[in-house]
Image 1 (cartoon, rainbow, N blue to C red):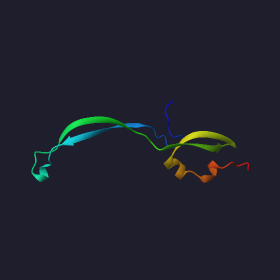
Image 2: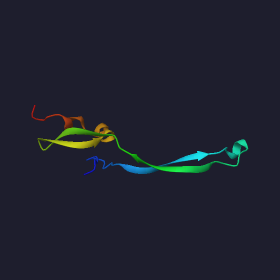
Image 3: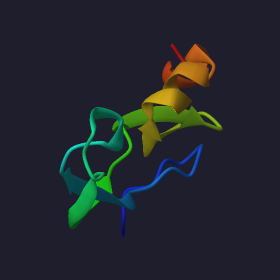
Image 4: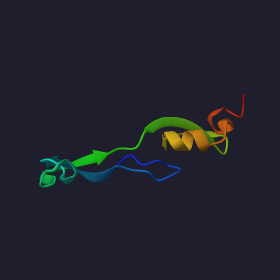
Length: 80
């Protein structure tokens, strides 16, 4: 099972990077040529946190953005 944020649904994405070679036309060259393409994985900043749901602790993966946007009382035991 992949790691996915329980609030925002963020998960690992794939993207492409490219290498370019040559001299740009601005500087009098013939232009930049693409010489290599590589696949890379872009992972979200996921943290394992315990949140309290209906008075019970639950460990979930949360993105850093979700942690900042959530109410801080969700991370504290309401029974204390």
